[in-house]
Amino acid sequence: MLVTERLRLHDDIGAWVAKHGATRAALIPVLQEIQRSYNEISEYAMQEVADRLDIHPVEVYSVVSFYSFLEAKARGRFVIRLCRTVSCDMTGKDRVARQLENDLGIRFGETTRDGNFSLEWANCLGMCDQGPALLINDQVFTSVTPETVHDLIQACRKSFGPLAVQGQKGRTH
Amino acid sequence: MSAVKKGLVTFAAAVPEEGLKAALARPRSEVIAEVTASKLRGRGGAGFPTGVKWNLAAAATAPAKWVVCNADEGEPGTFKDRVILAEVPDLVLEGMTIAAWAIGAARGVLYLRGEYAYLRDSLEKVLARRREKGLLGTGILGSPLSFDVEIRMGSGAYVCGEETALIESLEGHRGEPRNRPPFPVDCGYRSEPTIVNNVETFACAAMVLAKGAEWFRGIGTEVSTGPKLFSVSGDCREPGVWEFPLGITIAGLLAAVGGEGAKAVQVGGASGRCVPASEFGRTLAFEGVPTGGSIIVFGPRRDMLHVAENFLEFFVDESCGQCTPCREGNAKLLEGVRMLREGRCSWAYLQELQKLGEVMQLASKCGLGQSSPNAFLSIVEHFRPEIMGRTAGGNA
Ligand SMILES: Cc1cc2nc3c(=O)[nH]c(=O)nc-3n(C[C@H](O)[C@H](O)[C@H](O)COP(=O)(O)O)c2cc1C
Ligand code: SF4
Ligand code: FES
Image (cartoon, rainbow over all chains, first blue to last red; front, side, top):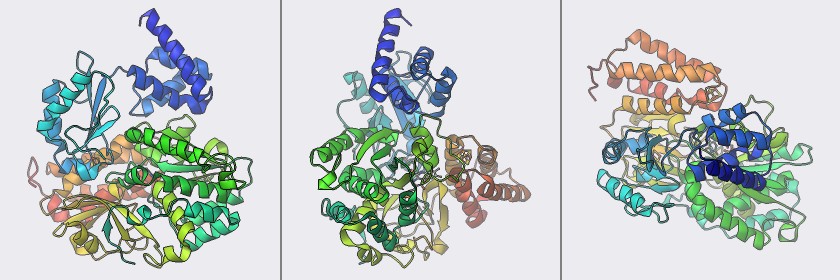
C-alpha cells in the first residue's frame, strides 16, 4: 500500500470512529464504512481499527471473517451477488449465472483482472416473487434474464461511479 | 372479516398516529393489557405472545431499556417486511414508540439487513420527519415519553435474525446465538432489558392500540388472531405479498394466488415444513401449520430432492458453526441428499439420516440448527417414492 493511501485510510478511519463512537458497538458500522469506500478491509485497516477501539486485531479479523458482506480480500468496484435460493432457482437463476460468468469471463467467487467486477452468490434477497434477483452493490435488480445480463454489465461499465439509477431492465420495488 | 387481498390491506388503511395517541393517553399497564388482550403473537416465526414479552420487559428494573425492531428478514421466501418498510414505515415506528412507552425504554434500534441497504435513505428520511413532527425525540406529542430510533445495518448473515445473535451483532461481535436464559427481556443489548420484535409485529401492535383488542381478535381464529401478511412465491399466477386472516387453509390460499394443482407447499421458508397436496386442508395458524409468512409453491413437475438440496446448501452456508449438531449435521444431510440424487443411498442409511435430523432438532443450540432438518425430514416423509432408487445423474 502506498504511504499516501495509508494516510488516507488512517484519516478516514479516524473520522468514522469519531462518527460512530470509540466503542466496541461501533466496530461493525466502522467496518461497513471501510468496506463501502475501499471494497476491502485490509490487514492495515484492521490493525488501525483495533488500535482505535482498543481491541485485539484478531477480534477484528474474527468479525470480518464472520459476515459475508465484509471481506478481507479486495473485491471489484461492482460486486454482483446473484440469489441462489429456492424461488430464484425455480425462475432460472442457473442460466443467469452462466451468462454472468460468460460475459464477465470469471467464475463465482472471482474478481475480473481489471478490478471492476466481482461475482458472488447470495442467499435469498427478499425479492422471491420477482426472481431471478441480484444485487449490484446496494441496488437490487429483479426478473433478470440471460439477455438482460449484458445490459446490466454495460450500465455498470458506463457509470463507473456509484450506481446512480435503479434497475433499467429489472423492475425494482 | 374475511378479507383475502393482495398487498397491505389493513396496514395501508391505518390512520396515522391513531395508535400512538391512544397509547400515550393511557398508563403503560393498560397499553400492555390491550396488547395482551388482542392475543397478538410475534410475526417473525416463533409466535411468542407479544403482550407477555412486553410485560416481562416492563417488569424488569433497569435504568435503560431497548426496543429493537428485527428487520433482518433472511428466511428464504420472505419479503413482506421489506414491503412494510417501503410502504408503511411510519406504522412500524409508531409501534416501536408505543412499545417504548409500554416498557419504559428511551432508545430503539432498527436492525436492517444489509441486503436492504437501498431502503436505508428513505427510512432515515422518515425518522427525520418524525423528529420534526415531535413523534420522536423528547416529550413525544406533549407526553413524558422520550424515545429515538437509530438504524443499524446487518452484513449478510441469516443467523443474525435470531434475536440473541442480532444483539451480539449490535454489540460488535460475530453473530453467534447466546444460550437462553437469560432472555433479552432481562439481559439484552448492552446487558439491559430489550424487546426484539418483528417488523410486522410492531405494525400490528400499532393497529391494536388504534382499533382495540376486540377488533383484532375478531380477525383470524381463537388462538391465532389478526390479519397476517404472506410472502408468496414459486409456481403460482399471482406471487407477491398477500393478506389473509390467520386460519385460512392452504387450499384456500392457493386458490386465491392461482396455485391450484401444486404438488407441495413449503410453509415457513427453509426452516419450515413441506406440506404435500394431501394435507392442503390444513390451516395456516399457530395451532395448524405455523409460519412467519413464507409460502413457496411447488408445481407438479418440481423435483423435491432438488428443493431439499437447495435448502440444505443454504443451512450449510448460514450455520454459525458454533455447535456440532448444526455444523456437522447439515453437512451430513446435504451429502445424503446428494447420495439420494445419485441413487447411492440405501434404505438403512436414509433411516440414519432421519435419526440424525431428529438429533439436530433436539441438540442444536439455536433455532437455526433446530429447524434446519425440517424441510429434509418432511420431504423424505412425504415424497419417499420420488426420491428413492434414482438412476445415476438424477431422473426427475
Ligand atoms: C435463524 C433464525 C433467524 C431468524 N430470523 C428472523 C428474522 O429475520 N426476522 C424476525 O423477525 N425474526 C427472526 N427470527 C426470530 C427471532 O429470533 C425472534 O423470535 C423474533 O424477532 C421475535 O419477534 P416476534 O415475537 O415479533 O416475532 C429468527 C430466528 C432464527 C432462529
Ligand atoms: S444451531 Fe447452528 S446457527 Fe445455531 S448456534 Fe448452533 S451452529 Fe450456530
Ligand atoms: S429466493 Fe431469491 S430473492 Fe428470495
